[in-house]
Length: 95
Image 1: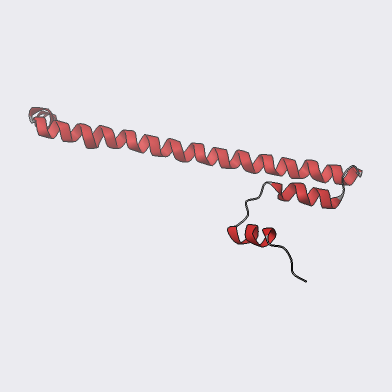
Image 2 (image 1 turned 180 degrees about the vertical axis):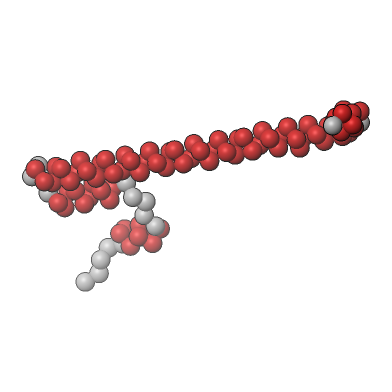
């Protein structure tokens, strides 16, 4: 083990390569794992909030203070549409 450490620290090029790939690679892995964890947490939070909104809208419909059509419009308000759907909606209907 001492020989490996001596070889790494004894040669400036080897030490530089160790710093770049050893320490840099470790930091890169930590950043990647952190990004994955935070992205997953954000997706879970978004899904929870969407489900909570759906439950609240359903409750408003059940008590009669909102029509089912209004509920559908609210539930679909945040969904992303494809380019084709946006073009289709913006073109006037021909008789």
